[in-house]
Image (cartoon, rainbow, N blue to C red):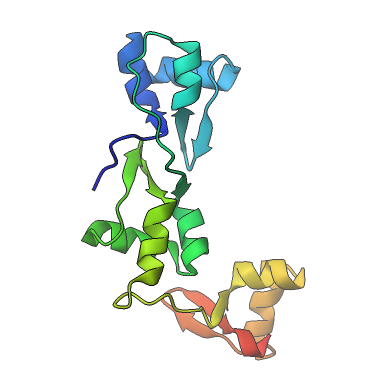
Length: 167
């Protein structure tokens, strides 16, 4: 389920290499002395940056694999992020952990989309946040319209979804 040549390393891996704590690495990232990409609440450090800044760091062969976050994968597959997490958990979608988060190879996403047993379904519903960005109205206004019956919405768990044709 892991990839042989990741593009990113975690702050814990860099801390182990430098012989300092993860907190010290995070402080250096926040001060700008180490370049990193924020993924969720954690940081991922590009392997190319590490190889330039720390020439003694163990090198891996170059990989042409491009990685995306869980949110980007959900957007590309047109599913929810929980669906992506469930596919990772079941082993249907190969992923690599970077800190506390997952990154997924783009080529693995195209394989999921081509698999006939796992069809990519177009979402017929939008969330309140998506409707908020589409209409420019606030979340409170949309909720008020739902409670007044001006917007037809369906409850899923503790959230509302609105059919696209009702927008």
